[in-house]
Image (cartoon, rainbow, N blue to C red; front, side):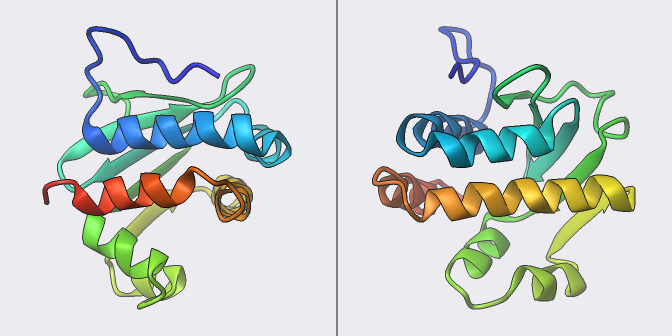
Length: 147
């Protein structure tokens, strides 16, 4: 799977790590990657982590991660905004995703049907991630990113 990287990669560190994690999932647990991809098919998810903005799209195949253009955040099927700290709080089970959303630490915007699809994609991703040997190192790199 291509992560859309090149010598002129304009993605930030979180987007690059997410793309790398998609590639790892595809290589190590392809059935989970396929489930995730199917739920994202034809949809754009705009993601903001701290000041970094990027888009995940799965048009006709594996999800691609790329830097967001200024005009496309509002047009995305789903928009997600969170801090690295909020993401780590959920990953480390200090707070559930629902608690983080209710506390406005994670913002998720979209039509109900699109939100359900995004949730299903996230579950497929997480269920695969916990079984992939390369994910602990990816998570450690995420922890070390500058705030």
